[in-house]
Image: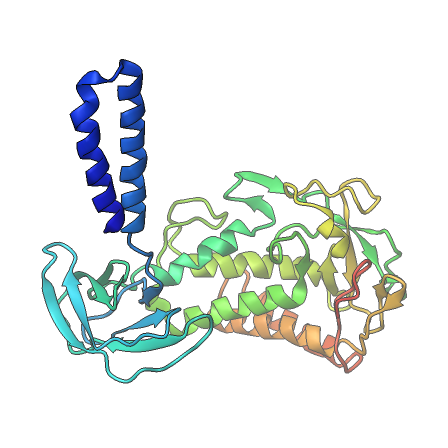
Amino acid sequence: MRLAENFLSEFRVHLFHISFCSMKKINGFFIVLIVLTLLYAYNFREEPTQAWIRINQLGYLPNSKKAGVWCSKDSISISNWQLIDAQTKKIATSGKAGKAFGAYGPFKQSYRLDFSHFSKPGKYYLQAGGARSPIFEIGENVYKGSADFALRYMRQQRCGFNPYLKDSCHNRGAYSLYGAKAGIPDSSYVPVWGGWHDASDYLQYSTTSANAAYNLLLAYRDFPQVFSDSHLANGLEGENNLPDIVDEAQWGIDWLMKMNPSRSVMYNQVADDRDHINMRMPALDSQYGRGYQRPVYFVSGEPQQRGKLMNSTTGTSSISAKFASVYALAYKLKVGSDYKLLYNKAMDAWLYESKKPGYTQTASVKSPYI
C-alpha cells in the first residue's frame, strides 16, 4: 500500500506542474506512470494455485462409485468440496472433504472427494481448496467406444499395409539366421511382413505379438457386446460385418502364421536393436547390410547373438506355447475363414514346445539389455 500512496502523491505534484512542462517531459511522465502501475499490479498479483483435482476423464456411470482426488504441493487442509453444473455454474451438490490421506508422489497433501450419492446425468466439475477439475460427464454411455479406442494404437503399429500412412512398409521380406540345423541356410529369404511393430521402434517379436493377439481374442470372448464394426480388415474405415477387435486379432495371427509356416519352422523376431539408430519412417531400414531386408531369427532353442555375448536361451517351450495358445483360442472362437487349420497349427506348436524344454530370449547385437 505504501507504494500506492507514494504513487498518488507523486501524481498530484505532476498534475500541478503539467501545464509548465514541455511535451518531452509529459511523455516522460506517462512512461513513469505506466511503470508504477505495472509495479503496483505485480505486488498484488495472485499466486498460481498449487492444488489439482484428478477425476475419471471418461466420466462416471450414474449409479457407480464416483470420486475425485484433490492433491496439493503445499501442506494445507480443506474442509469441503462442491460439484458444479458446468452449464448453469450452480452448485449441484457438496460435501465434507473428510479424512486427509497425506502425501503421495510429488504432493504433500491429498483428499478423496466422494460424490457417489449424486447420480443426475449431465456435465460437471469439482472444486475445492482453490482447485477446479476438468469438466466430466455423468451418464449411461460414458464408456461407449472406449473398448474400441485402444485399437487405434494397434492399427497405428501395423506393419505391411499401414492404414494411418495409407502405404505399405517392410514388404521386402527378411533374411534368416540360426536356422541351418533345420535346413534353412543363413540369409534365406523369408516373407514375414505384416503384424505389428513392437513399440516406438520397428522390431517385431512373436512373443509380444502372440500375447497381444491372445488378449484381443480373450477380450472379444468375454465381452463381445462392447466392440463395434467401423473398420475393414486392412484397418481403413468401413464395415465388414466383423467386430474391429476380431479384425485386429486376425491381423496378428496372419503374421504369426508367417513366422511359423510349418511344423518344423518357427521364428522368434524380426530385426534387432540395430533398429534403434535413429528416428525415421518405417521401411527405411538399410542398417543391416542387406538393402532394405531385415534379419529374422529362427527359434533354435540355443543361445543366440548378443553382440560379443550371447543371450541365455535354454529351449523352445516359452515361445512355442504362446503360438499354441493363440492358435487354440482362435480355433475355439472360429476366427478367420480358415480357422479349421488352426487346430493342427496349435498341435504342431505344442509339439515344437517339447522339442527342447526351456525359454527363448530375444537376440540383440548392440545392447545386452536382457
